[in-house]
Amino acid sequence: MKSEQDSNSHHSVDRFRYRISILHCALGFVKSNVVLTAFQVFFRVFLTWPITYSVPSSQTSYGVFLFITAWTITEIIRYSFYFFNLLGGVPAIIVWCRYTFFIVLYPIGVTGELITVYSSLKEVQDKKLYFLQLPNVAFNYYYFLIFFMIMYIPSK
Image (tube, rainbow, N blue to C red; front, side):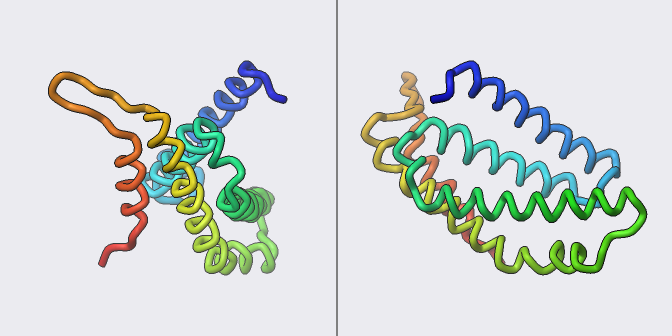
């Protein structure tokens, strides 16, 4: 069983890695859109900490397996592409994987993310997790998560 200190240490490493990803885009070290990378980082941090880490019932969801698998394969391909690019030549198979696998991995990842958020809703509502009631306003995390899932619906 991991201690709280181990979890905080991993969280710090993740935050640093994600910030570096955004910085690399902003400085032009990688040819990715900084805004899209920032959104991806936000959603990944949000899904791993305020959902999966904070809502234990979501940890046994099939969605976690789906999104972790999709993210892992995506990152292996992406960083392999960057590595070979630094060496001066990217093998054709890596290029093909980079620009083809997303066709399958993107829907798998999104499906896993949505299943995970959906599986957390009952516990969030029952425990009133992250619920904040102030005199004139309230924040209801349950409704925020529903809004979050609706935001996944593609627009025109």
